[in-house]
Image 1 (cartoon, rainbow, N blue to C red):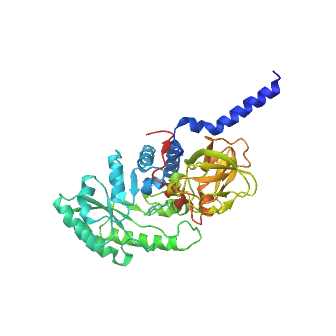
Image 2: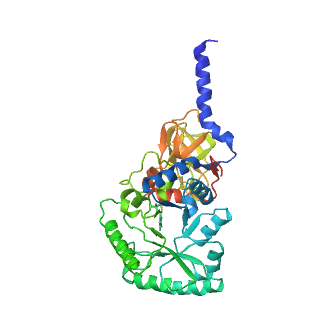
Image 3: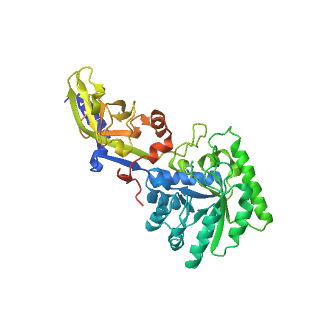
Length: 394
Ligand SMILES: Cc1ncc(COP(=O)(O)O)c(C=O)c1O
């Protein structure tokens, strides 16, 4: 046999294999692939850059990546704390065997004080009345409730205002059932390096810390930096930083760049579940907002808005390393692709919605722009029903 056709045959087979291997590696119709080694690299880089302890922010199911798996990887990489929004998330981490410190950053009802104490979970305190209820409840369970005080230096969300903070904190420290081990604040605009408010927030926070010191109050942990502050404001790092988005490898904002060693760890994949040629004038999907112009090759994929893929115009997917448009309305569990540019597309071929295929990449930032939102919302919106496959299963 002449060598050239044979070579072409092998090339066709091997290039096809690139797009079908994932299909052979699992039986899912859609799934997330998460590289825990990359998460560990990101955590180590953040420790190196900040020179501080790291609290891995794993709320919202680890920004869609899977909270317990990200927590385990982060702790293995050197994070000493995990941060979550709600007590349920903290308890789930304990049940998954996470032994690091855990801080609940949001509100916790005093009714749940016993759960916090029994699971050795730190709560956030920012209100006098809630503090008294915590103390009352903690008394019943032998005390020992660990707390971090949140100060609102300008975020306009949770926190004690700096004007009343000294009096509030002094009272808290007189309640022996409470263990005040940290104080923190949160920035509203640290992702905008030119905004003056972060420096102003830092002045208010530092002034309070000095006042507390003069009054003999020096909590063990002082912290303020989310990813953007960690990168943009070295003076915000203190002895503990709280990165979320950077830990997952994404930029906090277009103006806040990451070192090249910090990279996304997540890809979202699916596969062609149907490939058909429709005649001209055929309606596609609910409402028939798309009609074929001529005979068109249309593929179905097994993802929809219930997976976190929005019904928005201009959606794109990667098939055989090429960008193809989503056509017609996105359904709950499925949507359709225009495949005229991919003549050899077949049922079972891998499709990438977020991540890399061949030389093409669809980033969370690109999807966020398309959906009129930002990268955070894209990844946090990845539905719980999506199977998550970890490259380094902890
Ligand atoms: C109090 C607090 N700290 C830290 C973070 C992490 O922020 P980022 O993901 O921007 O790093 C968040 C996230 O919303 C937060 O609410």
